[in-house]
Image (cartoon, rainbow, N blue to C red; front, side):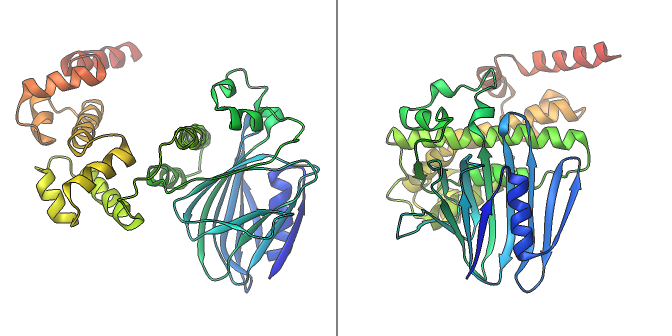
Length: 344
């Protein structure tokens, strides 16, 4: 096992330390740093970008060919870590603990440690790892005027305002596939312009809020349904992507049950857990979002849009559209035309 001891003042210093042990090449573009590696120690990349208010995004997309243990000395750089594992797994412990706690695929964790207490992250050999880490430097983040820290539950609030790093905290969350959808979109943002950087920053704050909101729900007793396995949740997620790509299909609960091999009760429970909606509610939500996108990006009239997304009644479409967006489809169309006209 290769042990990498990290004494750093920033995420950038940490990546440089990893680079000194595993090799590769560091490149930079518009503030995004990428460590590319292809040797007998590892293959893949680690990329990171730091934004204002002490927020950093670190993405690991890599295979190690030997076990790696990162030992982080916290005397100089001790952020609050929000971790999400998209593929493979990692394990974590504080230096005084004998056992590691594993963070499996599609699971998250929130880690903070006391000043001068090292914490350790273990990456296994031979496994393709895709891991998203958001380190938050609390002193900097608390300077942000609208940080909403006061709205956190008492446990996480105490960690966030612990500017002197006197407390430690370890939260290991249950499976969360909705977060994976967001992380995947974040990974797929190209990075060629300042506009891309702004997209990443916005998505990063959204991901951070998702982590915090999920933590809040778990603390309030919202747990993964015992009746659903990880495999079944993945099946539901795959089918939801099918609905997203083809919203006009005549979906029924019975048909989806036949296609997935899951009972209607499990489907309802799974959709409510993943998306906060019933199966019918999710389909309706996707169709309405698609309709709004078509209004913004095409010259199709309202009737054409209605039938292209699977509705058969324009009046029903107008009714539920107004309930969701607080305006009729025609009012939205007029608003868009007015906006475009004013631009010229």
